[in-house]
Length: 94
Image (cartoon, rainbow, N blue to C red; front, side):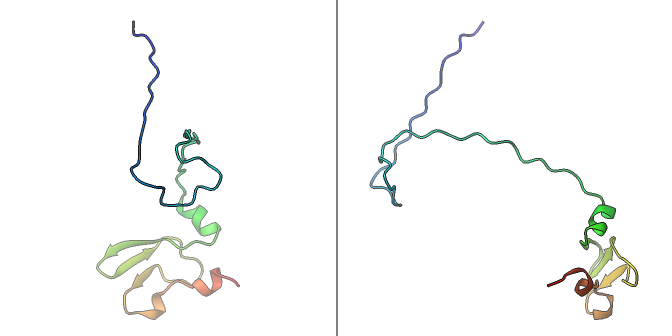
């Protein structure tokens, strides 16, 4: 059985501080603040479409499929063809 031994790390920085410390002493101890991990939840194409996002998936060189196309939008966007661009003006307001 292993005994629990506290681990203490000491770091030192040569020279004066590079930023103003305010009222904090230069050699004052610091503590790491623990925070919850970032959680990523997969979002489906229909959810993106419902909230107004456009998702383009590369299918070929210069060809992207608009998997969130609505109404009169083209399903494929081709490089150099401005008529195949998604209708961002209808999705983005002032």
